[in-house]
Length: 281
Image 1 (tube, rainbow, N blue to C red):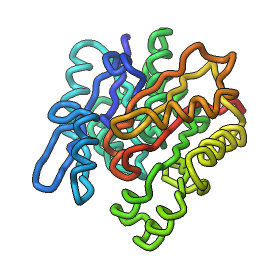
Image 2: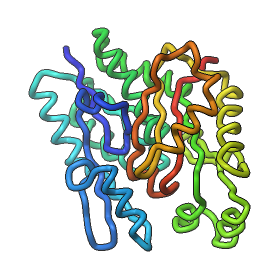
Image 3: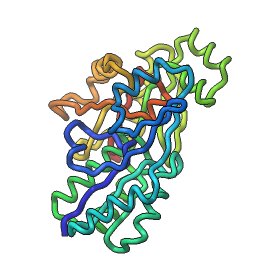
Image 4: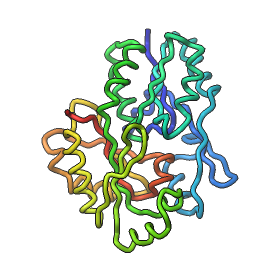
């Protein structure tokens, strides 16, 4: 039985792969204006509006009905479904998908990625690879539940302004951090966003990212890998790739890169650099 991979719109994948999955969109609210992610607004327009806005946008998770419609269409076509979602600790999206899946026992399998953005994206890419190998839906879901423990998502934040707007840090801390050119390095661990450290300037932050990758056991280059950036320019990402060249040399001819979507972008703002990979150990 063919397996259809379904994701929510917070799942950021390497360019071209989004055409191989079915996307259930979240809704983005800028004040009273409402946009369906990927339909009414794309990532570039989102960052233009984020910079222009005085307040942070908010997001609404898809309803169980939105997932049920997608699942029903797949089942009617004779497919089974594996649905990969953002961490259940960051959004109620996984719960909506799980409620909808109850109508299709043994046919629809929901996997909480316990990650976000490109971290969820590499798990979804792995699901596509397993489906192409002919693996069934239940077995794919079981493999994803095992492999998600190896997913590492690390990011360097360029500005503290958006963490301040979102209430994650105080205005005093944000002001002091701006004066000192502080660049926080964060991760998603156990499904939650956590601070790993702070660096003075982007070069130190890039070095900290490299150190954290090494501490996690290094990169499994036999598994999906994805780099990402927020905002309208990938200049900071290209600088990171140059600064961390020793990590990638001899392992990949090219490094897949993508723009990070709205849910993560709302909280970290433009200029952030992220890397997602499966740990080698």
